[in-house]
Length: 269
Image (tube, rainbow, N blue to C red; front, side, top):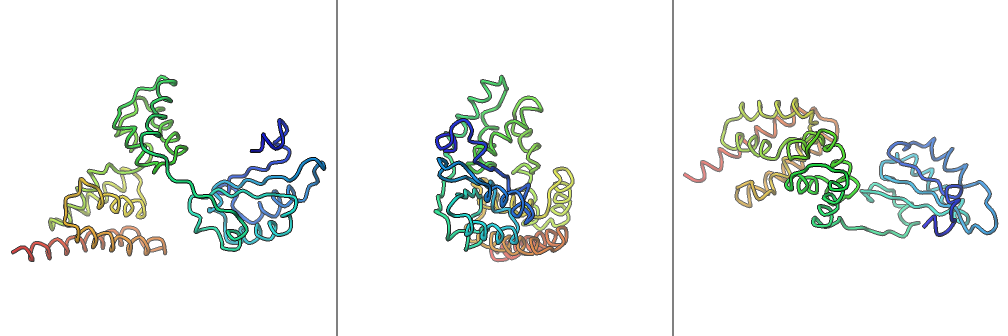
């Protein structure tokens, strides 16, 4: 778009910032404001401010941006890219035309990853590319970043992929859940500590992986049990986001799973 509007000198009339790196109010008040108020030749219809990962901006920065959008609407167009639009304040959303892009299809992402591997001479396992897709959730940029990190360690395998993204292997998470449901609380707790230490996982990382595995076809439990676990996992995640202690909350979750398992066994007798 910028090339079409401005030609080879597009860099003079476009400001691109990654809001996850420059997310504070000072960036908006200095870089963005100075760019928006600068003069341009009469043949240039407007300038462009592109804010990538805008959902990472602080609330104060978003309020400052809203005021700039109001002041310089005649001379500047603002493009905000976000993974979570709900984190963008309503006054900004109401001033924008919202375009929602669906995640890319698995076959398209995997085909592109294969093409990259062949061009770069990387060895890979087919299953590893499928895992990269699942972890990227259809985001091509994230998929390529994971592939690049994995390829730096040699052949791209499932184990290497999980290592570079810092997540536990799914079967290990399922094993921990099963231990708790089987009433083996201390073994489940030891497995939890092992996962957190070996993979450097935070409490939120663990609860997200638990939630993912609960809905995996590999996790063999009745539907009503999935519902109960998913519901309680949501409560635990909320507490963790609010600042509760990771270990205490996750141990409490495993204890809850252990009690749930005992109730299920008692109901079957």
